[in-house]
Length: 233
Image (cartoon, rainbow, N blue to C red; front, side):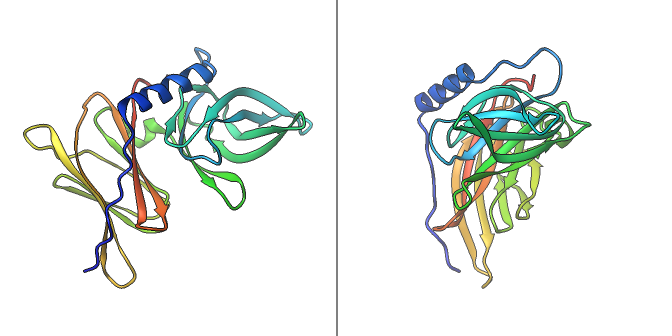
């Protein structure tokens, strides 16, 4: 059996706190009613990239809903949204140019939009998740596989397989001390189990956690964990 080196990306608590604080200060405040969303940026085209959230207006123009600054490993504050086709655009020469398009379903009230930079096309791949329909409650872990491999995620004694491009919801099986071992692996074409991530973590029953499986040239899959605090409103 061939085993690849473990990949671990650690962000100090002070850095995470500063990132979340800055994102909340830059993001517009959603209205009390209407659709709402959060962007979960796994990888960005550039750091501190200012984007305009917009929809198409009658006549082909743009209706701007707000602005947001994104960077890698960032979850934004709540943003105003609108059902239907939405865009993330950059402003060039006074005009908007869409670099990401996704659909906010007509039957959704809240949304999580996961972003992954496409460095070849200089755009973003977007994956929309309705947290209510997905059952993304406190104490659960939302797994989104954006890699090209079927990932096997072990959360203590619980094991979940997540095909490429799909998602799954899981709850960790904790030990008596409230900790559990999180492992990520996949099986290559030769049948070898490739271990990509292995660490002990504590479970917070008051937070929703996200595990993103991203493509990696070194290990096949790079695992990224992000917490989601607060309500979706």
